[in-house]
Length: 224
Image (cartoon, rainbow, N blue to C red):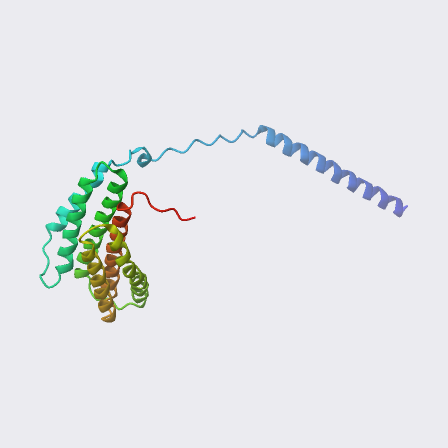
């Protein structure tokens, strides 16, 4: 008798579990059917700057001329401004070359890059004059890393000067070497901020020489 009740009890439990599972499935299906669909995503709004036209070549020249005028209006101490003045003179020469090559897009683009690189170097020299001493360990590492790369860039200056076709290319080589040496001296004096800026300035001068060399080689060799 007791065994019969146990069998009936187990059968009823299985029936209730099976029935509950079936009703649960139907409930979930009905709930999903009543849920409103997710709204479709809207297309992203285009950025305003993406609609701006690319600057024209004349705009590049105008920007470089304004930068040069602004830097020419800055007065510095005679003991510190020798390289700064030389950089502005080199930038003036390059801008004149840019004007004379407006009919050649390749040369125009390379020479405007060279002019802006020299102006960048002048900016960094100017900042280096105003930089205070900083002996932070992290600043030491950054300045050392910059000067290490600058050392190899300066060694490339003679090569680029030789193929640039510019009669004053030797002045760029001297400027690059002078700025690097000043950066090394600043590093030894624990003026790490100044050392980094002068290293950047030196590398910018070599970058200008490289672009001048490219401008003198309108049909560059292709290495396979």
